[in-house]
Image (cartoon, rainbow, N blue to C red; front, side):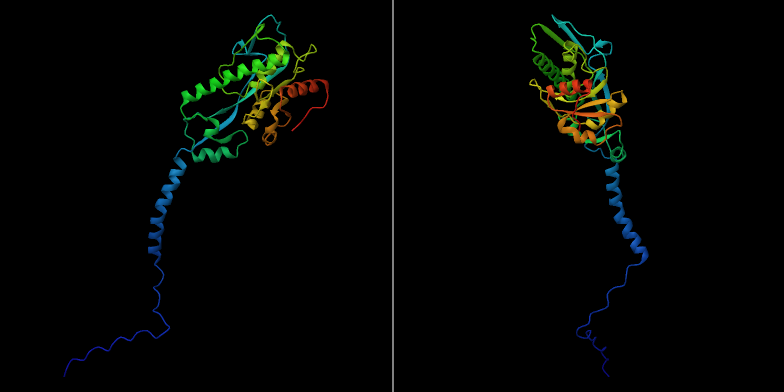
Length: 285
């Protein structure tokens, strides 16, 4: 009797498919999750510990431009003009930022992002010339020298004085950049002429501020204003002259008791200071 062949396997009925495989076991799921978690953890570690292209800034020093800094007058005037005795203070303001080669990491950014006395800023907005500390220092010193030269020209132009008869030297070696230009100009005017009526520009107040200056008297924005207002309040100022274009930035975190006065030109700044003394109308942000 010939061997009996196994019956042929019938295909599944038309319109039906084979049953899908069952769900993976719990152990298999755990292994899969563990494998996937490794690259995620690695990416998080890189994000936490890798340096980021940011700088952290805080309120910096202030200096009274009609006073002394480190034992010598900030503004030294020689020539035929008599230098006035001044009262009050004209405080130029600064920010202090992490050095261009410092490592700022994710925890630093998260911590300082919400702090009122800190600001996280793109590094190239703070140090546009790169991350070499020597190059940055040289760039900032060059900007400060140019700012001082322009401030002298703007002040003498305002007073209609000749540089042949008046020589002005500015001494503030520890500060770089152009943001003290307005206050250098105001300080020179206060020392040489005051308010033009025998009084001081300050009216005995401590007045702070910031802003670049052009030889024609135009005042330009500088950045970092919210932190500078904090430095001003910390050091006793009650009034802060702010470039008009930066009013909104200044208002974002103005310390209580500090009056913001927007200025766009040197003449406007002088008029505002005289109005403060006289109790007249003074612009506000």
